[in-house]
Image 1 (cartoon, helix red, strand yellow):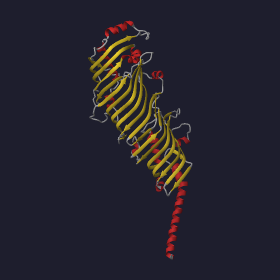
Image 2 (spheres, helix red, strand yellow):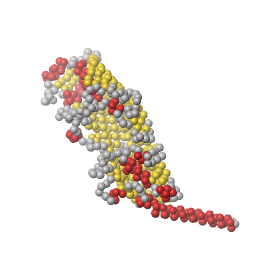
Image 3 (cartoon, one colour):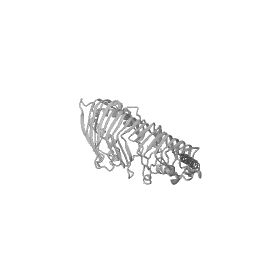
Image 4 (tube, rainbow, N blue to C red):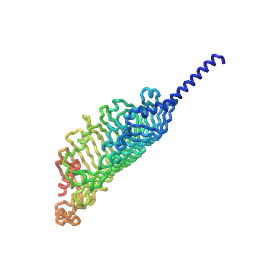
Amino acid sequence: MNKFAKKILVVFVGLLLLLAGFCLFLNYYWIDEELPKIINEKNKSPYFITYKNLDVSLFSSTIKASDIVLVPKAALKDSIRKAGIYATVESVEVRHFSIWSLFFSDRIKASSIIVNKPKVTLYKKNENAIDYSKSIRSDVVAPFEKVISVNEVELNHADVAILYPKNGKPMLRASNISAKLDGIAITDNLLKRKIPFAYKNYSFSCDSVFFKPNIYYHIRTGKIETKNDGFTLHKLEYLCDMDRKTFVKSVATERDMYNIKVDKLSLENLDWGFRQDDTLFVHSKTVRLDRVNANIFRDKRKTDDLKKKKLYNALLRNLDFDLRVDTLAVRNSILEYEEQVNDVAPGKLRWNPFNLTALHVYSGFEKTKLPDVRILIDARFMDVAPLKADWTLNVLDKTDGFHIKGSIKHFPVERITEFSKPYMNFTGKGILDEVYFDFHGNDNGSKGTFGINYDDLKFTVYKKNDRKKKNKFLTAVARIFVKKDSDEKVRKTEIEVERLKDKSFFNMFWKSIAEGLKKVLV
């Protein structure tokens, strides 16, 4: 090797050593001096962040930190009043970061961040557990964006709780969350929106969620899985936290008490989000609920709620967001309705199994034309009698018009005793071979055709002050005036009833059925 080549080699090796030394100096200086300042002193978020171990590689552009603790800076001055996020994180890995952004923007810019086993507690200032436009924006996204800017976020095995500071009780708790977002963008304009960031793809799963929306109810779920175009939820519960007596005492007027369990809820071809004007849209090809068990209880001894009850046309028409569900399916379910009118047991109606298919369940939001909502019901009334109904309405019809027709077949009358004995103080025997109804109506009332074919019908009326003893006089009167059978043919009549505006659609439907029974039987 000639002298010139040796000189070139020495210079080249020297430059490499100088560059390596410079990188080592940067690595040492940045790890020991600049990175802690960015995380703590130059951190413009309202949170103080500490860590136990930190590993930075300038060559692979990765940052790994472990045993991380995050607390509000305000908590360092006032440890009694808690507000904001408190968190511990097992480890965080930042990949493909830009070192130059650290020197010039005091913020970590990277390709992705992976957060492992965080345990997060958010103390709310009020009892609203989830206020999307404020909580997510001010408490989560904005502080995060001030510390780090990334394209992809991955969250593994997280536990999250939202507590009310006054009593420490959970408003929301979610266990073992895993989530992934990519194509993330955060701008000043996006931070003003309901979802304060943009993304291309997402996935989310968790083992369970507990949520308490008010003093009466809680919501609990099993496993949840969702991604760009689908959503699945297992073991949903919407249960009242009070017994019936306490619930009735706590409400000022008549109100339904709900206890609902759903084995599985799924949404197919899901598309949801917020428009630029922050309007929510939810579109799904199919929403399916499997094995719903729903009990609805009402105590009629409470004062009537005299506010107008909207029919389903108006309820859908007045929704302030864009809802579009092509098919709503309820399968293999049980529906129970109970009414209490005195101190004895409530009257009970039951549909088991209960199956429903609803087509074109759309809101009227910003719509000028919509297809009819069509609801098909296939059930067994009081566990035994096949019931079918076909119910149509149009959301944009401001008269709230509807058409419902259907039938009940082969119903043994004694099965209605669960409802008629406590509610109306009578029992019956005989067979309703077929009950047929075909009603049209609107917000003002209902009219149409009612028919019934029955055999060997007998009623027994009981004493008002001793419900175990038969009222012989009223029983005799009932048997005189009630026609025993329909002579093997359907007896038809026309009915017309006026709607009580402070009652529901189902009250009007029941009044229509009762009017038909009275005209045919008496």
